[in-house]
Length: 173
Image 1: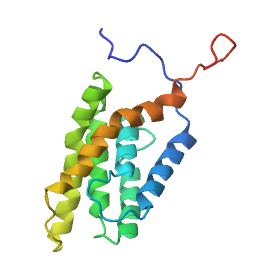
Image 2: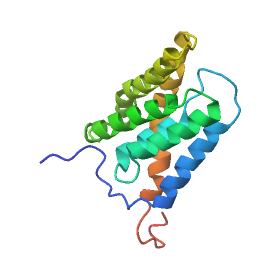
Image 3: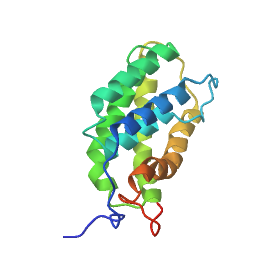
Image 4: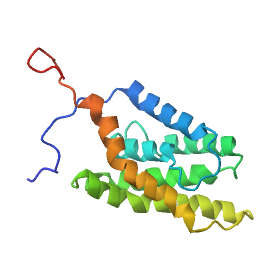
């Protein structure tokens, strides 16, 4: 049996508080008043997709729905707009998680790009159904930025699990 790439190092179990802290931090970053810039990535969507790929038993579709409702209330958007997009993103990330493990990080970023595009498209479609304005092509900038941030997010969010279980003077990490 062939093992997926990148499995040469066993990861320690993830701390549930770390998962919660990263999701809360991503939510806090999304709550910053940066204006309506289309290129600003949705860090909460990135964190939700990451944890749905790596820890689907801890962060699932229900968590994504709750965070989506929080974003809807904060943005004053159509209730369910972000919730629908995040829920679809979570479902697709859980579905694609086994396939993603076989690819190196740059190719994983390419694989999650359609997931982010589809999540944003569903969110935009929900806004259009209730009479919102048609966005320009620049709406594709945010999913592209999220996909480009995927390798960095993977490196940062998996870093606490890569430490040695019993450090000593020969293995300081």
